[in-house]
Image (tube, rainbow, N blue to C red):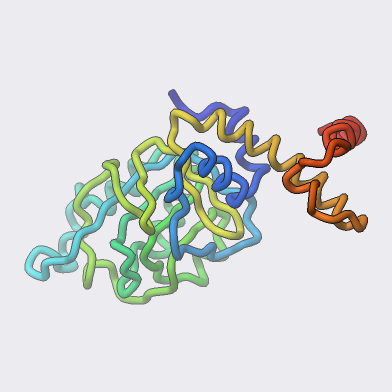
Amino acid sequence: MSLSAATRQKLKQVSVATLCTALYKRGLRNQFIQDVHPLNPAHGNMVGEAFTLRYMPAREDLNPLSVFQDRAHPQRKAVEDCPPDAVMVIDSRKDPRAASAGSILVTRLMVRGCAGIVTDGGFRDAPEIAALAIPAYHNRPSAPTNLTRHQAIDINVPIGCGDAPVFPGDIIVGDAEGVVVIPHEIADDIAQEAVEMTAFEDFVTEQVKGGRSILGLYPATDPDVAGLFAQWRKNNSR
């Protein structure tokens, strides 16, 4: 079952931090992709189903520049096969010493309507990618071609990206802080819980700015908090 428009919209309005807490409540502690950063933090939330590409260490005799002439080369094929509204997630073995992709491939994903791209390695042409109208996340800029260290080997298989497990079809959400992976089967529930958590956290923030202590408020153990929150929601149509 594909990601519903309603759940996609909810996920566009909540933070990765809040989603991580909702996942932690369900015992999922390792869904945040470590050491990846947005090239352009000004993009809104990136939301889409995972379409994966896996690299292995390059073997030089199998990885000359001529491999790109093969239309079935896994990296090139992945760019053409990644569905619209999906996020390409690349397992680069946390190795940014060679680029996972460059601006031309990311531009192709953008034109095809993909929702974003994430690698635990690096991108070449990082300034150009930052200027594109597509969210992109990586470890750090990396000019050398991927062929110098990476060999594209599998498309749309389970991978690890920044120590997070990513299965094809999992829901990927990125914001200005980072990227989280939500198992597809619980995405609707996690999205709804995150919306509720965000409303309460916005209420708490307003209370704290007004001078109230966090003790008894966050978490809500004081008896008056529930009533105040209910009135706040009514006043703010939340």
